[in-house]
Length: 390
Ligand code: PLP
Image (cartoon, rainbow, N blue to C red; front, side, top):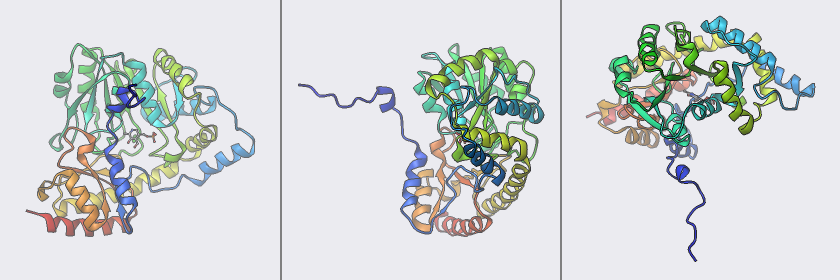
């Protein structure tokens, strides 16, 4: 009798595990490690926001909400989009509350992609994009960026990657892992190409609150782009709410209703207490968001200057909380650098190659750590670079 080697589908068997995990696992077993590896705020969610969730539980709000989320929350999200980013959405049919930006990405990709459709992805980029496109039966077409362009995609590069099979372009600004920001002029040039080829856009704006040098601009706010863009955002980063798992999608009604079909079958709705917390975050949490942003900006300044001084050349990231320095000076590969740094100096960073094309030769360091930890990390990094410079 022949036995089946595995019941797991081919598409999942072929999926590569995230390269970030390996370093977390290594670091977890060691004492005295300074982690610049994790992609989340070092702040605890504002007390008023936590209290709103507690109150909702005390009051017995423990059942499902509408599939698209609490209407009160959707109204506030629509108002927030209007006030912050000049984007107009109808809370009735154009806003969906999701389980993090992660689920928002998953259902957006699944709603757009037919088997064999190509999705253009900018790299170095967030580790989920390529696997999610592959799981949806699509073909990821990746474009590598570099520090000479501030890790930003140019219109020319975009144009060159488009084929008759291209369905959508996935952009992320401010970017994880590079911290790069697509400015309005840059977005306008990309938008012209996108419109000319009649493509859809998935715009991951999860770090929109954390743009330090200029106001965040959403590509959906540019002429002719609202109707072809799915805007993804959430509460994880700007509001320091990663563990609440709450995000949202804003998109034209026809696309939103398609997304809602997947959402209602796969998820029903996002967590109810988290939705009550998010209402409070939008009503009363903005001061804390601004304060956290001020703190990240201060740390960015210290950390990026220090990296450059050590000889790890680093472009100034315009947003998010990541520095993405070059490690060329050491002659080590990204993986070698990250592994040796962890073993010799007990500093955890993420090797740039896990973020795809253009990432080799770089490391990602999150500066969402205390100033004391950053100072100690700089001391250790300096020693490491001196020991490994050729
Ligand atoms: N998009 C980007 C670019 C991210 O960096 C992350 C988290 O690291 C996510 C989406 C997922 O965020 P969430 O916690 O809202 O699922």
